[in-house]
Image (cartoon, rainbow, N blue to C red; front, side, top):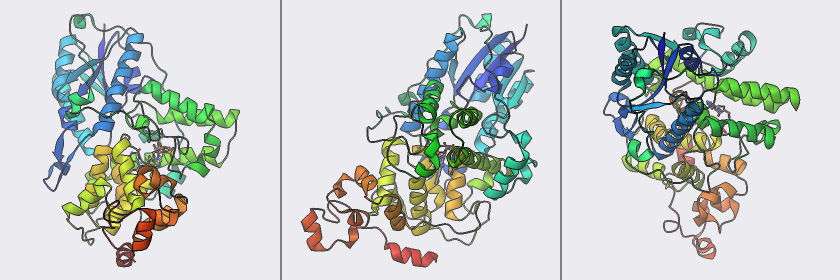
Length: 485
Ligand code: FAD
């Protein structure tokens, strides 16, 4: 008679879950989730005191609680359950293993320093207790063992990486959802524990989803599979994804799969198989290819983290850029984080982020570039702010994209975005900017993007007074670009 524990981490799903299927081969199965206090509250960045930030904000806390509730409901439907415990996994898991006399604990592994450190501590303690530990890789499209080269040798350039996997690697078949063995008898009288609320995790209630947001983003595998169904099949959006993906308003311009992918409610291989099925049944075109192309970007940053470790999160980054002089200016940072810079395209995107936890890729690129390039503030403060706020935060995608834009990551060019040009191109009618900054609604689009060009008389005419209704710009944009050229 064998007994196994499966430790659910950011893999809150039953489909395509190898950690679950491995443990489910035992005679008795105990599914466990551990609420680790180190993931919540204020923390010093990277363990140093260079600055402090909140690890998890309200949007992701809500999403995670909903995901746990959904997972528990699915397990209960299958006559199993989800045991929820507060504490450090390296203490909680050995104690539970002892209580049910477990032979095995299975779990998914992640390549990032904080996740790996917890995992090593868990592994050491369990092995000391004579419990076998099986670790599985399960959050990328391509499996780490199927890469054309060892992960330590993956290319630092996206295009070479993509071409190599497209040519020489295959996406594995999904792991079948197993039937679940019963809970261990010795556990019958023990409390399963309650799924936390956002208030339990972060000490405050999460706001209800704001109706101006692109989607309410309900956590959980059920909502994830519904979103795939509605985006790909019902609304039939996939056929035009490449043309619409740079949009900023509404639920349909891109897939919005990221929160579910990152909390593990959705497997990228499931998305891949749905795209292939769509290509067979409806249409195969540049758009269907492009969704997979973007999932390869996601993989790219995961394998970059596996290769470079903590360097990816350091200020000089993987390019060891010690030549950039980063400024320290708390007041400037606070204005950026409040969406009060006086540059509408930046402010609208930051306010969307603060209100909903989500912002388009176009918006992320522009607010990141403004902080790192125009203001020259330490890019990691911006990235850490995203870590707090994003509902779809992932360490590799977030810090990888930020470093890229700040000129310290995976691109040899210095990449900066001209935010006004971007605003005119991607928001020509200023519909996005006025959606989030209604105070600029009376202005014609060209002024809504550059209100500082309004004369005194025009401010009176439109009823938008700079410095009263909307801030004066905090920098002279043109001069800040000259310094970068
Ligand atoms: P779609 O356009 O529908 O793309 C499908 C999927 O491809 C996404 O869900 C995502 O998993 C992946 N993807 C797309 N673009 C990227 C990219 N540039 N890098 C990595 N994966 C990508 N994405 C995150 O998932 N988590 C983050 O913490 C995160 N932080 C970012 C920070 C900055 C500064 C920037 C510029 C980008 C960041 N991204 C992050 C990438 C991207 O903006 C989001 O993945 C995307 O906007 C999510 O929306 P979607 O699911 O509709 O994407």
